[in-house]
Image (cartoon, rainbow, N blue to C red; front, side):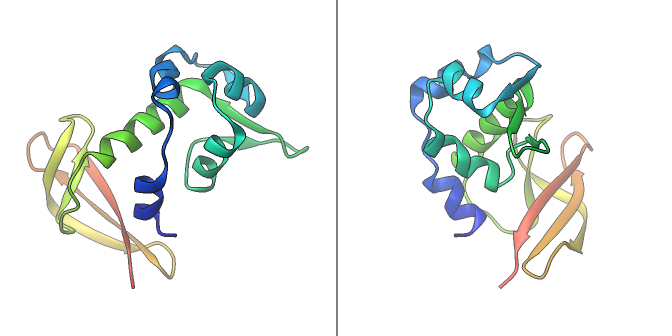
Length: 134
């Protein structure tokens, strides 16, 4: 499953999304996060495989910073509402919209992925976009 397919197939219940702003800037274990949000393990674990901010301790326990996790999930939800466009556009978090990239530079990340960095066409902030190759 590609990252784009994950985004569109990941469905968190509305009740979980409404509780995200309550998360504090502290570390939550996965069980604490499940309890705080009222979510199941099956709903949350796929998010960590695809980039949700977390740490794993020496015993294999997952720890999540509440604010960072909430921000990441909200950005994921915003992405779901965007149209898929060509590689010269990216989402600017400062402008909170899809913008054209100025001075785009593409760097190969892994065999299947590349990152395109550029400047927002409106505010000049750095914007990044991951691209799946082949």
